[in-house]
Amino acid sequence: MEKKKFKMNIKIYKTIVFLLFIFFANLLSAEAYFDLSENNIKIETDFNGKEIIIFGILNENQDTLITIKGPEKKALIQKKERILGFWFNTKQITYDKVPSIFFIASSAKLEDILPMSTIIKEELSFDLLLENKLSQRNFISDVSLKIWQDNFVRIKKNKSLFKQYKVAKIENKLFQTRVFFPAESIPGKYKIQVYQIKNNIILNKKEKILTLQKSGMGSQIYDFAHKNAAAYGFFTIVFAILSGLLAATLFRRY
Image 1 (tube, rainbow, N blue to C red):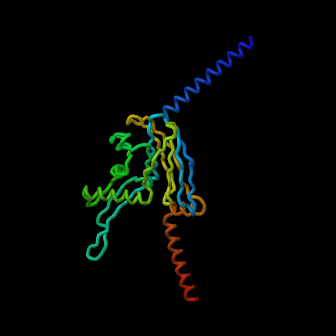
Image 2 (cartoon, rainbow, N blue to C red):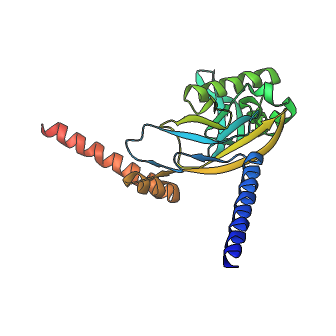
Image 3 (tube, rainbow, N blue to C red):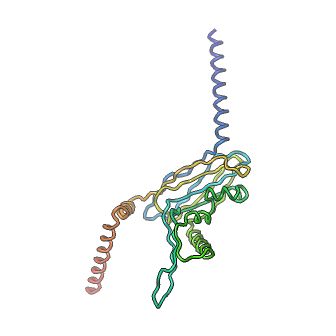
């Protein structure tokens, strides 16, 4: 009797394990699981940039798209012109909430895996991102506006703050990409989103946060400067004056 009961318990246990396996297999096939090689990057005085790896599980015959957006801030672009021998800011464009960093990585060409309507809606283009963020423009025609936007994107790309990467597929089940955060990366929270795409449709979207954080003495100075801007400015001016006086005294003496 006890033997039969033991065998029955084993059968029930095996059935439960099998059902759990099927459940999690279906769960993973329906949703893209991904992770980062690091969730927190420390910015110290000798920080020269940092590379991280984004990797995860992917369904067969699906494409992957990854976006990384840094902390948002206002961007002001101005043009100076000489009038009567003096230089003035005559034209300017203001963009609200522009990400300090914008990386796009995909397993295939973006236009081949998503319709333009989705690309516009999800802001999956450097140019489209700026068009949606435009808040003010002074004396600038539509033709000139496109030139200004192109130049802004070009400058960001030259500084590696706007960049496109390639997502590598591994045995049609895993994906991986490496992205580099340059030395100009600012502290804050960086939003990383992974899209699962099939037949030009976004099946799933997952999100994680990567934090860039100042550390050491640089962190204390940075926090003080941002929380007490007026005091920081005052001490900076005083320090510059004292340094100048000290240099002048030493120069006269020696």
